[in-house]
Length: 499
Image 1 (tube, rainbow, N blue to C red):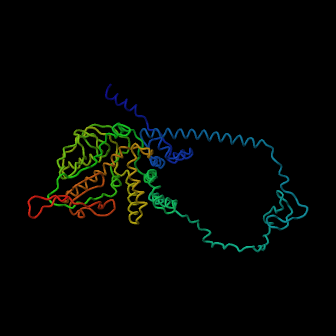
Image 2: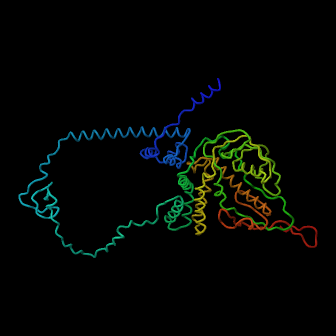
Image 3: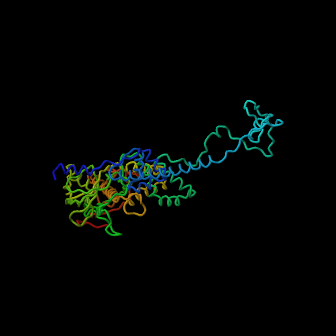
């Protein structure tokens, strides 16, 4: 086969994109079929906000477009058939009605032998219409004579002033008008339902944190530029090896303690990093289905998971290994945030290690702003709760973002979103953020003693010169104080251990 024949075969294989009706018609078909967006989204493997985008003018592509067109064509055919049946039944009813003999209307208007009071104005009328005496010509009707109202037996209720009668009734709670109001309305409703019982309201809100987080995500995704596949094909490396086991992705979770400290006695401050998972929602996430590739080049426009051989880390004595605690050498599957951290540390700006060797990848086109509106709404609600001392909203918001991250993998608690790749990437971003805080402390002259999980950093030195203290997501708060090291006596050369 010549090169041109091969090209022709490819062109023959690529057909035209499926035609779709106008956006307004797409919504009309779904609503006439009484299908909720969530049900359509599950059938197509996308999120409800993506369906909203298609009905607002965005265009799907590829296989998803073909499936969507097939659905809309089927709905149109079914609805057309139903309308035809209804129209046929209506015509049959009309024919049956027209076949019945019409009743005579001669007795509807009759002359009266003697005038009687008109039912409309009370003046004498000489005709009867449908059994009631009345004037045929409106001009013959005289204004009705005023009647004296009977004295009520009980005092009348005072009549409300005109302005109050025209004003709509006030409601206890206003309807939600935006994403943030979804959070506030849920809290207000829970407190009202439990008569202000904080513990009971908080318990209810924590149980519904996952569906509420998904509803908030859909609200913040309205008008978004990107379509998201909510249930894509997942490679085997992202599937659990056993029912209670884990998949093959390494998240680079830090669990590091410095082996040796400088001589002397030291006061250590354990710092708590606020909203670690909330901040980690800002990370490069793949939009569509992951695609396999091989090679050593990293495309920053894409994101996913990568099989790499990391370089040797030679700074274990003062800084944790960015790859986390791993005993086995050789290649391993890491996430996009971990790879980007390693590449960053290998740049001339840092020069801390060699770049990792990339063997293969599963990636898709990505954006760092996919969950940005979602993150900002949660952050603003969290900060507002802190300012007002609102612990109910604070616990509710915390549960929303933490459970959102933990249930987007294989979980029975979240059927709307199955993206284990996102779960690993967000967690790894939190670990990467903690590592960078440890490096910032080291670079500013603090002694880094310990780095654990997503939010625990222990340091020696004046940490307030490096980090702002507070409860905002850009600040840190003190978790603990303790003393380590040995003290040297004035009259002896040997140190005395005082721990």
